[in-house]
Amino acid sequence: MKKLSIFVFLTIIFYSCVSTKRNLDNYLNEGKVYGDKQRHFGYLFIDTESGDTLLASNANKYFVPASTTKLFTLYASLNYIGDSLKGLQYTLKSDTLFIRGTGDPTFLHPSFGQNATLDFLKKHPKIILSEENNFQNSYGKGWMWDDALEYYQAEINSLPLYGNLIRNSGTTDSALNLNPRFFQNWYTKKGSLGGFLRDENLQTLPSKLKWEVPFKTNLQTSADLLSDTLGVTVGTEHGSNIAFENILLSVPKDTVLRKMMIESDNMLAEQLLLQSSLGLSDTLSSEKMITYLLSNDLRDLPQKPRWVDGSGLSRYNLFSAADLTFVLEKMRNQVGLDQLIYYLPANGVNGTLKTFSSSVEPFIFAKSGSMSGVYNLGGYLRASSGRLILFAVMNNNFTFPVSKIRNETAEFLQLVREKY
Image (cartoon, rainbow, N blue to C red):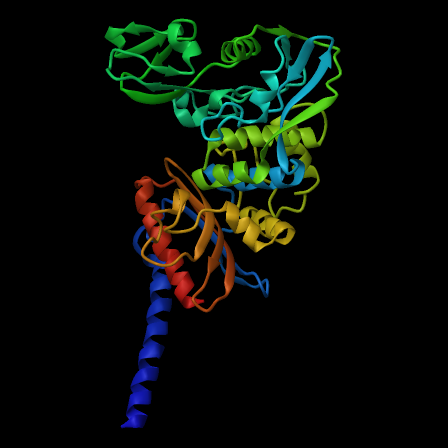
């Protein structure tokens, strides 16, 4: 009887393993969405201890990465921004404070509260704003015009204010209650358009009670908005020969990096990549930062990517699964696993993975990236055996809802977890 029980137990284990393998094979060859031949699908799974490749398919092919691009922005920030963000560059001459922006996204941002930059500026009644060091376009390459009024596509500039967004909390659909209040008189009601129109740039605002939209940025608007906030006149200067000798620090870097990664915040990503360029020279340029990294720190990437922005909003970006795993492992070796997963969403816990495999304990720590026809995931998976697996899963060119691919990917990773 005892021998029979052992036999039955071993039989169950055997068939369980076979079943898991068969189900995993179905995902890789026949099953569900993963059998759709029109879709572009690639993946790479690597045992971090041995370095062995466990599973791979199309790992060296290019995919539109969407927000997994932020993994590369994270790398740039970890290596080229100090422990705290630079809030301002400044110099004081007589009674005039000359300032220029550093790309710091936290200044007057509602998520970060009042910080050292505002306290510092309030002490100076005469301020001149310059931006001759700014070589950054306000839009990333390949950004979609259709998304110009979406909160997730705020403009990029040297001195972001209020997250470069206007927020409305009106009590009726015919009233505006804008923050910052500076913009309150810039808009007039246009009933036939079902929204509010800013004639200056043909910007139609949503006709609903609460919304967030980007505002157009330029040096004069920044100075006027800052004047209104501080209650003093802020002047502007172009082509200044002023030497900006001092740097004012603002928010601890880790706080901003975690929010960028957990919430997949595009504005923070773009501005952090921009600020990281100050680690190379005195000019602000995301393109310069990208070019430098691909020629130096990241010159050994398996495939040289096409990388054009910090957030992944652009479909011009092209990365491979091997590229994602390369930069993930490079960061793990630099800062350690505990610190790296501090920045990454965990399944069922937070951020973009909060509803991802939420019925099981956290075993995935990864950054996702999605847009129409795109769903990717790159990070670390803790297998049932305790093995730590580095992975990237890439899905492009599908017509299914992103939610369907997300669910299929969660199921796929659960099977990988069980097998290994």
